[in-house]
Amino acid sequence: MRTLTYAVAVSLDGFVCAPDGSFDFFPGGQEIGDTGEYIFGEFPELTPTHIREHFGIQAPNKHFDTMLQGRGSYQVALDAGLTRPYAHMREYVFSSTLPHVVDPHVSVVAGDPMATVRELKQEKSALDICLVGGPTIAGALLPEIDTLLLKRYPVVAGAGKPVFQGAFTPTAFERTQSVAFDSGADYTFFTRASGS
Image 1: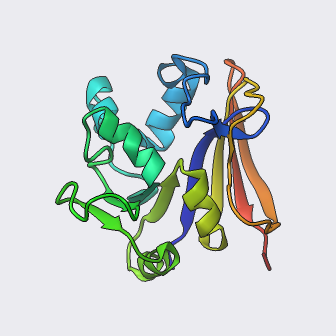
Image 2: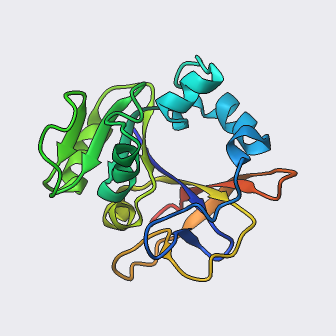
């Protein structure tokens, strides 16, 4: 069975964006520094297609072939004029407000996100599923999230939207790997604890 990884940038105090949804408080230039080199090499599929093209990244997907996004995360792409930010993968957007067809290559899901994820997990594929951004959809999908990739940056936001937004549902994860960078950022991987 395939797994679902939630990959998200986070501040030291646990926020993924400001109260208004903006995230420009994260340190600039990180994606072309040490953290960028790591992502480009180890997780090239997590870099949006237009950025891959800009940096000449032609590496095949190593871990994921399906990208999930919430409405807010996808809006960032739409505001930039992109209807298919991860064109090198299959894309699903969970939204009850978007038109059914925004782009013929993007599946807009207005129904139950859990049912969709469970179907995707049953598919036969050597690669897994990734969810980027979206604390609301992450909260809704928490029971199906197997792995976390927290890209923690050395900044305190003070307020904003947390990594997960939703009901109080304590869920145990175990740290499996952490990579620290000279810039002060670190990428930490967590796997759902057995029985959680």
